[in-house]
Image (cartoon, rainbow, N blue to C red):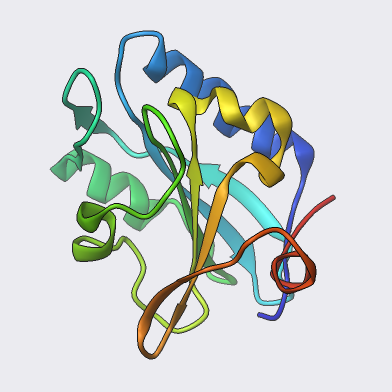
Length: 150
C-alpha cells in the first residue's frame, strides 16, 4: 500500500468516538482497515479500558476478538488511530506497545481527547513504521503522499 485514502466520514466517526471518551477524561484507540489498494474501508473500535486523565488504554480480551473479527479477507489494518489528552506525539508507551509492527504501518495520534480531529489530519501527528522504528511525518508532501483524506 503506497497511500492510505481515508474518507471524511471515517474520520468523523473516529472523532466522535474520541470526543465521547474525552468527555469522561479518557483516551481511546481504534484501527483503520483498508484494502490493498489503500482505500480505508472501516474503523474498528475494540472493547477497551482506559485510565481517567489519560496515559493508558488497554484493549481487553473481548476487544482482541473484536479486532480479529473486524477484517474481511481482502483487508489489513493499515493504521492505528488513538487520542491523547493534550499534544499529539508518539509517547514512550506508544513506541513500546505498538498495535502494528510491519514496515509501512501508520500511527495517527489525535490531540486534545479527540477535539484536534475537528481540524482534520493536519492537527494530528502521523507516524510511519520503518525498519528502524516509528518516524514522524510532519505536514507536507511526504505526509500527503502517505495519508490522504478524501
